[in-house]
Length: 537
Image 1 (cartoon, rainbow, N blue to C red):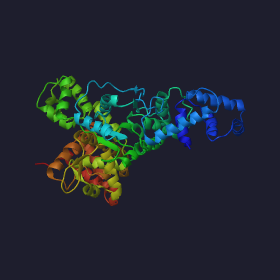
Image 2 (image 1 turned 120 degrees about the vertical axis):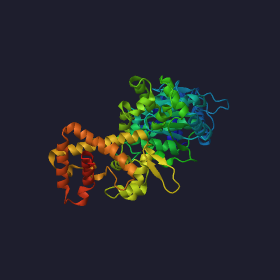
Image 3 (image 1 turned 135 degrees about the vertical axis):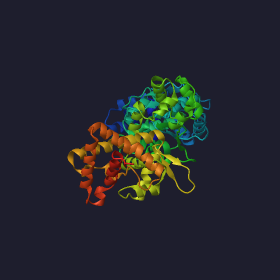
Image 4 (image 1 turned 60 degrees about the horizontal axis):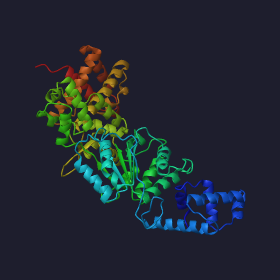
């Protein structure tokens, strides 16, 4: 007997309505016209009419009882094809002739890929995974601006001749899963209305059935839009949890198609299913090589100079950040990279906005880890991080948070034979340092006005100068945090003596308070006072 779910899929493809499927199900079980009419509460004439429509949609002509036998033969044959994976023709039926599937290419809002830099190795790797190793789901992961979208479009154009259908979809507006599926199914089954398959589970089944019977490449760009901020990576926003089942079925159920995703982070279902030798893979996209990076600078009209290599390294080959920086260098520094680098600022304008979007998504513990990495100014081990935190964190939570930051492409892992070390790339280091100093300045300003040290949060939980750090690290902490903080206080209060007086009062208020309440506050106050009152020689 043909399973009901397969019967629904194969009949819906031909435009058979729900009411016609009801009649057909009874007829396939040998029920008479009269019995079907009684079961469904309709007239026998309505039963005959619905069966007649089914025969038309399966292109079965003639008269007599042989029509039902012929329909049964077609359905059984098609179910056997489904079970064995035999190639089908454009009607979904096996006829022994060459496959003549009508190709469908719908590029949606895919951007132009004619101007493309580097990525030969990445393109070759992805092509092998998709064509040779027949991966069902492939994720391209990386920081904002790294070129994930451009790579997905370039790859899809290279591979389109290998697929019966190519669909490129932009998820940045956060479409509900139902809308996405209706849009795709309308292209696959143009004669079928969106309400012909009302249940979401059945819509997924219908798309999967198409992916089993035809070679389809589905590109979903911007999957991070579906995911929740303020938590560890991979969790869904409210209202988007249904995508979890969709991704899980795409990853776990057999089909001969491929879903290519781009995202800042993987959904949790993909993270659990991926592996180097599994049909679910992830490519962590790093920066462009020197050749491709410098080509961007040439195309932006900059003048070649030795400082180019330093600029490309500081931005870690991030193509969008390089383009933004090149425009600023052209407009404000006469195209001279060395002159730009002398100012020591990598984060401005749209670069800061890109980083803010990613950092706003982090959990509280993830942010705290970034703050400590910015303060320490050097690669840290997990053990060192755990010792430095003011309030102890269970090792399991720390491991999960560091792993989540890694999956979000925000950490650089340093090769070390004895232990894993983590640091921040230069642009993110500058952004996090600036963000930390801004929040601490706001806390200081509030405590100056209220005389309530309990308002200290980051100022209490993070030591801005590490007494145990090497002298050169301490010097960098002073220059990158204490000095800018003091300068900002001067610009706001405009009286160094008043600032010193405020800090002295706060130090007095903190004396005698419980250690955890004070935290690093007194150390930070003393560091600021020392910078404002340098020792006399």
